[in-house]
Length: 144
Image (cartoon, rainbow, N blue to C red; front, side):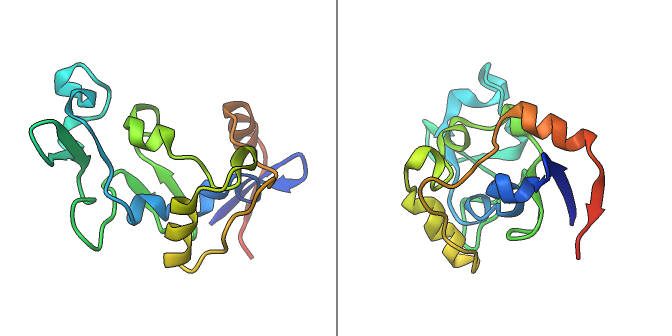
């Protein structure tokens, strides 16, 4: 795993999503069918499957065990979303537990399933695009 250093801190420590991915491999990612690219939305339709006449889900999340087809990496280690700019509203609206002082029980439930520590209120987070861009311009250090 590569670690990105931002302002002297490890980026994955500032944004736990970058070393988690549990939600992407635990929950069905369902959304309104019109979010698909074939209906004018941005989610690549070839990465989805039908759930009902009105819902689609990300391929790989309809069964158990599940894993979103767009998840790259290993949950609990280093992960990223292959379609992050075009991800469905379900993903956009899923908050990190502890972000803005609010606990997301679903986030912590998925993290617990993968043996990851639970996140708590008032954790320092760096989720902005500017921080991520800055991280990519810094030196990458190999994991210990």
